[in-house]
Each structure stands twice: as structure tokens, then as C-alpha cells.
Figure (cartoon, rainbow, N blue to C red):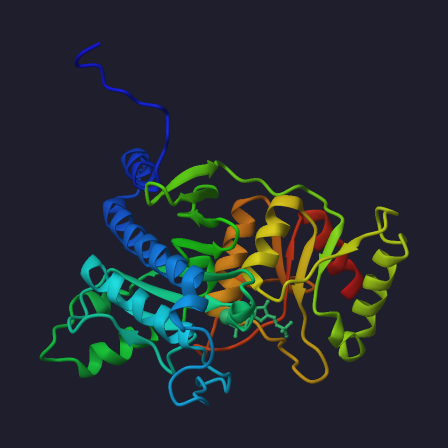
Length: 351
Ligand code: AHM
Ligand code: MG
């Protein structure tokens, strides 16, 4: 009838965030809504670019043909574009002072004024080696509170504030106030925690909105899939070799034979692990003692995400990834992440 407000029960990301902010006892959650909303807009843009990359000619390497980032990795065109999209989406949110990104040598300020309340870390387009074959990629992010010193800086007096603020991204994962990823795959899925559970949203392209499709995600306590780059097997710790051998022979704790799945895109491999259970790992090995994954914008955000879903994430026996205190922006760490029982099993095997 006339005047009836129709509510079909659809919960968009914006609606969800606003309702959470109203319920929250933490002050200032409205600022978090703005920040996440800016990130989600950037993710929509990246999703659209990734989907049409083969048509628009944005596959392949960045300008110059052989551009490498500070870690010596080739930069793809879309790595660079995604980084720019995130920076420009965050600038008007007005709440972010500094970002550290896989594609920037050093943390950068997103605005002239160091007035942001948050600092964020990003891997703008993780797994981009997969992009030219149209295989899943993702954006990973973590958000910290900015230290006091950063809040008072002004653009005429940058020297001291600048240094302090640029170092503000070097915080342990236990300080994260939000973390998430957006996966660009057969659907575009944003998985997000602001420290009170984990929720997943699927982009409905017909209306351009993220819709709550995975409320309160809980990882199965045990899975039967392992996900690691087994080409590194002969460089692994023999204890890890034995653990994986046992999973293959149905001689692990469960006595079940495991399956192997590995995309080589952390977001895709981790998303599957979150929903189906099991273990994803990028261990250290003889050649790379700290493995490959970066603490600040890959390992730590994913670890908070998993812990919020009842999962576990360790860097080795007795070492929680979230407790690691970074001393370099691009530092790497071994990662074992997944169902609590599977992570306990690998922890015991490695001890
Ligand atoms: P990238 O940030 O340069 O894309 O590298 C990170 C990616 C992860 O997505 C993935 O888990 C890992 O590298 C795969 O590495 P490998 O090819 O050594 O198995
Ligand atoms: Mg990456």
C-alpha cells in the first residue's frame, strides 16, 4: 500500500557498517565507515579493471617494460594502476594519514596534511602474476590507529611528524583495528573484520553494491586440503616434508588422505581455506629463510581475518603471526594459516 517502506532484507556493506558503528561501544566508528567505504570503492574499480584487462590492453608489464618494485619484482601495469586507484580513493576519506604498499618503496602520505587518524597497509593487487591468464587476484589491507604524534602535524612543519608518521605502519598485527581482502574471481568478494567477527560481501554487479552473503564466517575446525608451493619441497625443513608426506599417505592426525590445491594467489588460496578448511602455508626454506609473504600487508591482515573466524595463524612453533613486531615495511615471514586443528598439527610437527 502507499507509504509502505519496502525492506527486502538485503544488507549492503554500507548499511552493515553503519549499523555496526551504531552498535559499537568504540567511539569514532563513523570514521571507520568512511574509510572502509573508500576502500570498497577502490576495490570495485580494480575489479572492473581486472575483468576487462585483456580488452583494454592493461595486461602485461608496467611502462618501461622492465619496471621492478623495491623488492626486485616485476611490476605489472595493473599493480601500478591498482596502487594509484587505492591512493586516490583514500585521499578524500580524510581519515588516513599514511599508507604502506607493496608497490611503494617507502610508506607514503595520502595527503599533504598529516592529520589522518589511521594508517593502512596494502597489497593493491596480490597474485598479479596470474592476471594475464585471467586467474584470481586480490587486494589485501590492514588498518592501524595512527599514533598521537601524527594527529597534530601540519603541512608547514613536516620534518618531525613526517618521520614519526611514516614509521607508524610498523606496528604488530595485534594493533590492527581492521583488516580485509577483496578477491577478484568468478565473483568479487570482500571479506572484512573490524575486530568483531568476520563477514563476507559479494559484489552484485547489477546494482554495483557489496551485499552481505557470508555473515559471521567461521572456519571449519579441520579440513582436508593443503595449499603450498610444493616445488620448494626439497628446500623445506625435513619436518615439514614429513608432515606433508603424512597428509598424502593418510598418516596424519586424522588418518585421512588430503588433497592439494594451489593457485599461487594468496587471496584465492586463503579464501578457499577459510570456507572449506585445511591449511595454507608459505614456509621459509633453505633459499628464503623467511619465505615470500610480507608481514605488514599479507601475513598480518590475513592472520587477524583467520583468528576472527576461529582459525589460527603461526609463523613457526609457538609464534603467532600477529605478535610479530615489524622493523621493516617490506619484511617477510613464514606463514602457516588455516583450520585450528590443522595449524596445531603442523605446529606440533615442526616443533
Ligand atoms: P605478489 O605480491 O608479488 O603477487 O606475490 C605474492 C604471491 C601470493 O599471492 C602467493 O601466495 C605467492 O606469491 C605465490 O608465490 P609462489 O609463486 O612462490 O608460489
Ligand atoms: Mg602480494
